[in-house]
Length: 443
Image (cartoon, rainbow, N blue to C red; front, side, top):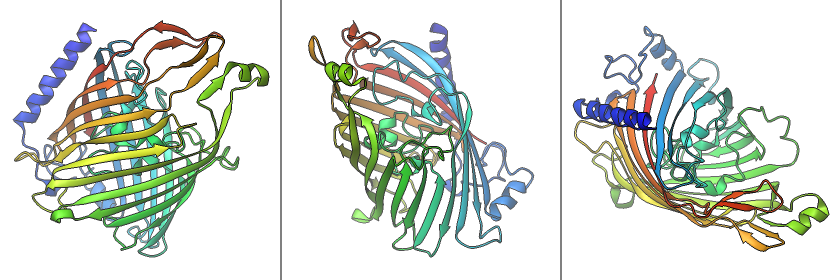
């Protein structure tokens, strides 16, 4: 453990030193494969010109490797350090640029993770390292979580079908993604209120509406997806079983005070049968099964708003963001969810690619209850957490991010459920402090 701590300290100092000692390139060369080694957008460059030629024909390859060293240094269920990472390859193809037909877009995503994380060390329901969740937590295998085809019938209407990556939804300027560029904690990257009903990579079909013809101005989506989707399955074995989740979402760009902002709202409804949060030992004995709950619904909302924006639409400046979610409370264990924070992009002179974020979240937990011979027991409490990070672009293709989190976990005790009666192993789980360092390479 001491060796790991020393390694983290060394990596942090080296990364910080490199960040302070270099000047990130200007924002206009983003996506430039052919610049010099320190200025180009990707580590492997233009592949002798082939990459630029393919991009002109509508074919792009995006390959990233994200590694995280993270440790729970105080509180939680247990302390300790872990190292893990995730690789992601995304292939995009535009049929019109390929000389085929207009309005068609193919996307294939290949993903795999390795190593370990401290998500179970904290006792929190929200993973402090969401990068390690995809495509499957602690799977150590390559999977294909997304294969989609989108066809626009007009500039305003498009259809999409295939195996979907739902993390593209709930978009937010300052708090979004898979834990590889902005926040580490899942609570800031995606509204967890929808996690029960919408799997990460389901088989599904959807309609995309662009009321103005410009996706940057307004977007409305309507999806029907298999509620049992997993990254390591095609989904055809469960798609016709009737467990379907319906999702509608709309996002609108605003210009309050002449500054860029967005408002987003969505809702989900699932026909799947879930385990109820309230279980009675007598019911389990008499029926030989745990009690079930049919259907589930949730509503979610988020906003982002620049408060300082040197050049409108540049993606640089400082702003605020927030999320809210509400659900049925049973079977969904998260009854209400709130988060709020500050984010920024490229605010330091000469560093247009740096990012930072500070955030706080609160989860109103519908506490699961077990009624047995010794009365009714509850095992969880409301959860809240704080996170701060600074993503330093050493080069456009190398980014180093120190991160700190404080989480008061939903789990308040360590309980052994292996027997007929739950046994308390640890009386109290205190607020966990998690330190992390992330290195992302863009190939």
